[in-house]
Amino acid sequence: MQNKMFEKVQPGFFRQEGNPFPVTSCGRRRNDNSPIEKRKKSNEPRKTTKGKGRNFRTVKEGAGMTAKGVAEYKRKNPGSKLKTAVTGRVKPGSKAAKRRKSFCARSKGWTGERGKAARRRWKC
Image 1 (cartoon, rainbow, N blue to C red):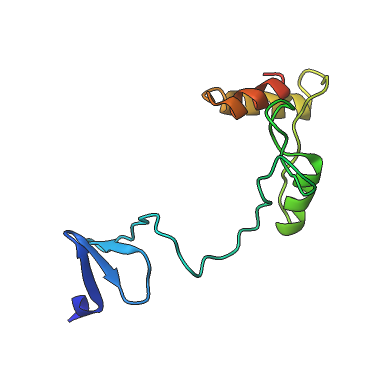
Image 2: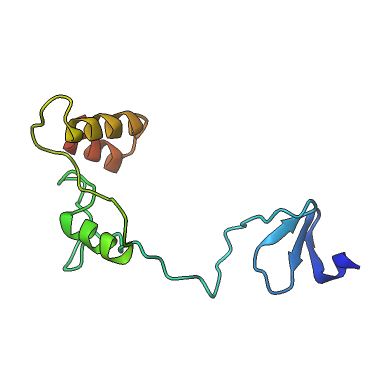
């Protein structure tokens, strides 16, 4: 009886009426990356590096978010603690130095052009 509300999409996958994501035979939802008409608008700023409303630096400038982009993100996501890059000289052991060290450790595997530029900007 319960399976009547699911239609078989392909072997092992079912689609529930009114739900855009298919369900596996065990009931888990799978995102098949299909476009969703009623997608909720994201709170993240537009990822632009050119023009008047830009929020990100170009690769030449060192990638990463601009101060304006961070401010816009904070406005749209109250309570967030997003900050801009630590680019200047810092005292060893200070909060900024620890933040830089943490970022550098997290981003070690970044091999893309923008990732490398961001790491240069953070002085990793």
